[in-house]
Amino acid sequence: MKLFLKGERCYGPKCAIEKRNYFPGQHGKTARPRKLMGYGLQLREKQRVKRIYGVLERQFRRYFEKAAHMKGVVGENLLALLERRLDNVIYRAGMGTSRPQARQIVRHGHIEVNGQKADIPSYLVKPGDVVQIREKSRGHSGITASVEATSHSSAPGWMEVDREKLSVKVIGMPRRDELVQIPINEQLIVELYSR
Figure 1 (cartoon, one colour):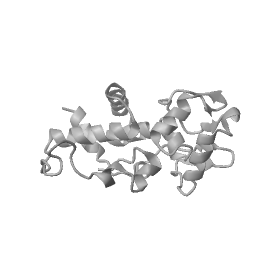
Figure 2 (spheres, helix red, strand yellow):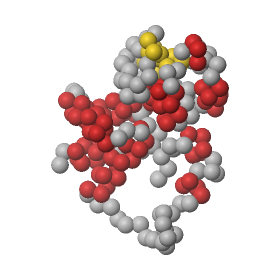
Figure 3 (cartoon, rainbow, N blue to C red):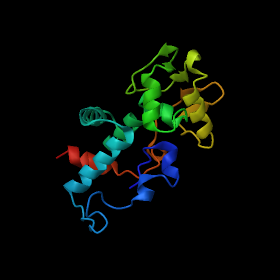
Figure 4 (cartoon, rainbow, N blue to C red):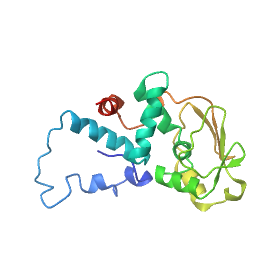
């Protein structure tokens, strides 16, 4: 399944899924896909969400525990927490063509939140926060190229994006219907961790 991990490359013919749409290894072309049931299906869904957001197991587990203690549906809370990460906000605002690139932009100190420098990708933004590119980094070639490449895409409804000022204002919490473009069954993840 295509997870769109490589940014613009995933939309063109250079995408790995387009080139080789079969299992890896010597017998990949002739191998028949195994039917996944129960635990395998739940594990595959969890691994897929972890890979999409670029989160390791221990951190993902903490997000799940935090979501379980929040009010509301656990699966939706989990996806909302992952969506509110600073690196994901930069990606969804169009300042990075992929989540790994957005993570690198954050780690290299090009971002400030409410006027303060922020270089931690897992920082959780909240409604009212203003995220913007730092004044020194506005002419950065990678950031300007990303903004131009993603100018056709629209931002989700829980954030206001100003492409001229390179800033994002978080106006609300992410809702389930505006989260990810890839179909995710978060109930399988809840069932896996509830074992």
